[in-house]
Each structure stands twice: as C-alpha cells, then as structure tokens.
Length: 111
Length: 116
Image (cartoon, each protein chain N blue to C red):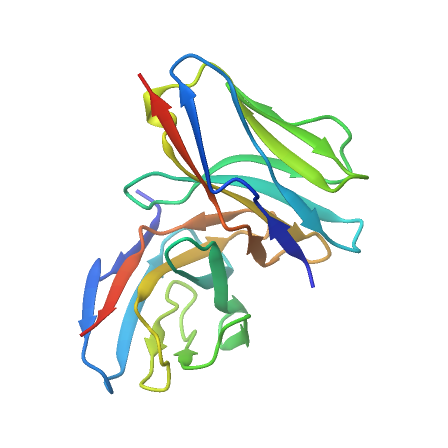
C-alpha cells in the first residue's frame, strides 16, 4: 500500500530543543517537500529535494534543516533558532508530473 | 515572485446547491499549472482539480469544475450539487511549469461550510 507517512502525529517541544519530524514515502518519487501551515494561512515551502543528497531552501528555511540520504526519507529538524515553531507541518512528494502528494501532517507545539 | 490570492475567507452553501470559490494569481510566466486542494478536518491535503495554463479548455472532475481566465489571471472553482462531505478548507495553488519538480505557492484558503 503506497503512500507518504509522517511521524509523530503530535509533537511537543520545550523551548531551546531541537526536534526532528519524520517523512517517509514508498511511492518511488524523486522529489520531496516540506511545508508549514499556520492558522488562517496557506502552506509555505520550507525545503525541497529533487534528488538524493541534494536539497534547496524554500521561502521560510531559517531555523530549519533537512537531509536526504535516502530516496524514501526526508526528515526535517526544527532547531532552537526557529523562533515560532508551533505549526502544522506537511510533507509532500512528486513524480515530476507537476503534481504533489501529501502526507497526513505533524502538529508541533512548543511548550 | 508569484502570488496567489483567495479573497473569500469563508463561504457557505446549502446542500445540493452550487458554490463558486474565487482565486486570482500573479505571474509573468506563460508555462504554469494551477490547482485546487481540499483540506477536510482531518487536515489531509487532497487534490481536487488541476489546470494546465496552455490548455484553453476548463478542467472538470465530476461535480468540480474551474473557470480559467488566463488573461485576467483568475482561476475559480465551481462545486455543483454540494454535499456535506465537501465541507473543508479549499486552497488554490500555483506551480511554474518550467521544471518537472516545481514548488507550489498557495493562497490563504477559503473555509467552505455546507448546510443541510
């Protein structure tokens, strides 16, 4: 059963801590993306990767980091430098057909 | 930079009626794609419909259709025979067509309520 999984579904972070959000896909898609969604706003691109071991910054990359060591995996680390990390995070992947498929999301809350 | 604007924060419709959600965008490119995504309370993003800019014919998917006005840079979504399950947040999105792995630029979203 192909798809995109994100874990955990809910994540709580203390101020000053780094946390890592997982995104895995078994669709054999080349490209993967991370978006952030805040209340009342649309999604904004954080980072994206078109091939393994390569990634580019999106519109709001400050305070975030990523890696792409495997085609299936694209983890996102929210660092302590991100001043307002409470948000809903969505991972997506693409075959290159100008269409993106989304995971179920992770809700991050800073305590 | 490309921008996408949805001027209706909220819309409502009676079950079985028709509703139109508005979207405008700004781009200097000629090759691009436009999308409508649905986000129900589960928050899973679901692709509703897509439109290639080079196609003059408006896209249609069952009860969902678009009115694509390229010169006016307008891309509205019409939902016919509205159902309770259509209640969700709807996002309009733009993607430049110059690369196969384009980035999506989203509008702010429109919350659609369906009344029984």
